[in-house]
Image 1 (tube, helix red, strand yellow):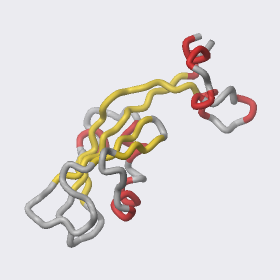
Image 2: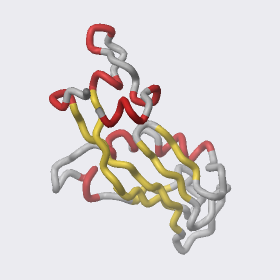
Image 3: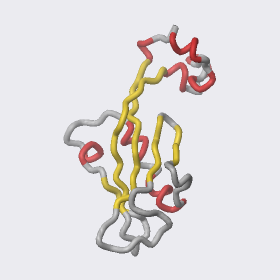
Image 4: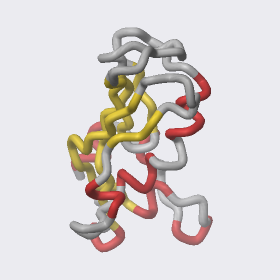
Length: 127
């Protein structure tokens, strides 16, 4: 049985390449995307994503996953520029689904830890 008092929520995200009037320089094309599902990156049909833009995006993603105030820039601003100053690519970060997590299933603190969520069977999750 999951203790619902230790629950927190994270948004799943879609990070999609969008074009501007400037040419793309990096190895991404308009429409390429990846998903953030909990702590996992799930690459779209292209199966890959260039390292340097990914490195620039990674610090933003945990903040975009969390609830923020309606007028916080993290809530309202969704486009991030490619870190290459010569590249016209931008990345649109969209909040998609929202999922709950248990602190006990995600923490490394021994006194609070239970079975990690990714090691639980389907039956365990439904209890």
